[in-house]
Image (cartoon, one colour):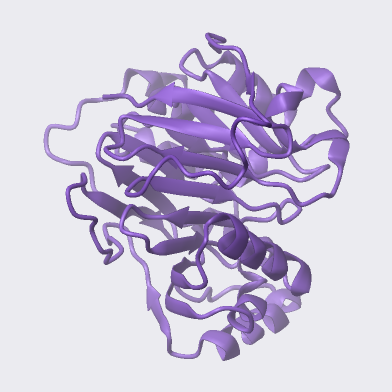
Length: 342
């Protein structure tokens, strides 16, 4: 892991809600206590929410707070539910009661959901009705484009354990020989949707809770993703995911873990992130209480230090044109600048 810069603490100089300018891209990792909720504002001003956290008022309220107070928006234009694990889809019905939501996407209802989870899924079915599209590998979200701006796109690289086909001439990935498989995952996490966000030269990967063996499908025998700038650490940083072949192939500059106080990053994952040469900074939503100092990132890069439940977030803003971006941890006053891979 590279350490080329000091953390900049600019509490007085850079208010949390200050924008870099119109026409860029914004990402907010909302604290839903170890669940998933990633809010994106496109260069054209549309909003995309990936996952809704747990059921109940808590997570839905936090999402709405960030949506309105930080992103300055009052509706969700596109909602992507990546898979039917309760910490990712559970807050959907509660969110729909609070803000208008445009199109809803999911990977299709599972045939083998455990009976204990049926109640939650039935609530989701009732809330969304027919207002949903099944997202499949190769699909792209229909998004508006900003004038005088590079193209912005969101492409589904995989869903329900099916992935896009390798393009003709895709070179073999030499890192694949180092892959060591783990036990087959039979949970809903294996069905996670993988989304690649691209804005000009900027690339951000959100693969939700995709697990170890299936992560390999993205980069072996050849890399279906490309090199990326920002990696949302899979599965909250748990060691069931975050295959080092995936991470080292993608060569991210920044990694962000939407973890909980006792849920990620796991020691194996953290060691992989720390040992990946391309990674310049790791951010976490929470300090992991079980890991100690050696298993957590720099305190200035943790939104909720010492495991506190203050529901703080991490934000990223890509400058118009996509050639550089800034990551902020408002609760710590941390602001860091990064160059996009061109």
